[in-house]
Length: 256
Image 1 (spheres, helix red, strand yellow):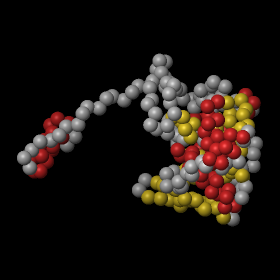
Image 2 (cartoon, helix red, strand yellow):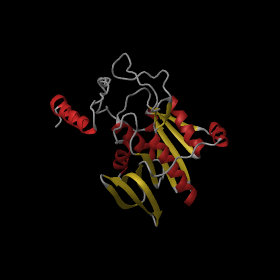
Image 3 (tube, rainbow, N blue to C red):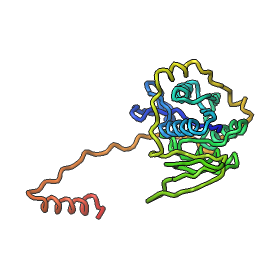
Image 4 (cartoon, rainbow, N blue to C red):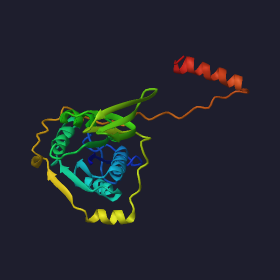
């Protein structure tokens, strides 16, 4: 089975994010860049499927030169090949990114495409489903379990208050949710092999896909308002403290 995985490089969640001088981007100096955690699950699931049924796993990323690091991580985990698309300095929103990726994916014969259901930096939940739409194939999002048999994939996905089981014919696209798997750590031999594997790099103009003008632009960024310190409710007994808490919620905060 030929499997494609879509991944993005994002700031590590422990990184200190600061707004750049232009007010619309972040400062990148000193940030630790990593593979998007949900995309790690996508790579792991693709590797497990390949190991079970055979085939190969190709990872794709649309990003600048530093995105090679995330692709090498996927190769070290066990992916077979990697492709990086250089945006040539252009700012692409989720829809434009999906259009370019779909154009590249059409050049292959992938039976399954796997992506994280969201990236932890912009949280727009858009690229995976939009890629499926541009390619005219079904997609199942937020998958926590999957099974492939007889040319179909049956997935359990999360919904509000429970789960839902869906089945569709292949080729298809799925997006990953927490609980699907536990991504493996790259082994030292895997890391050494990944350093020697070539990464197919092409520019945005070489893809043959015109992403058009972005429909979404970041005009400004602002830090959230600083929270006030907590308050300890005093009282001689639990009953007195409860009464004081209710009074404060009613008269000061005005939530009850």
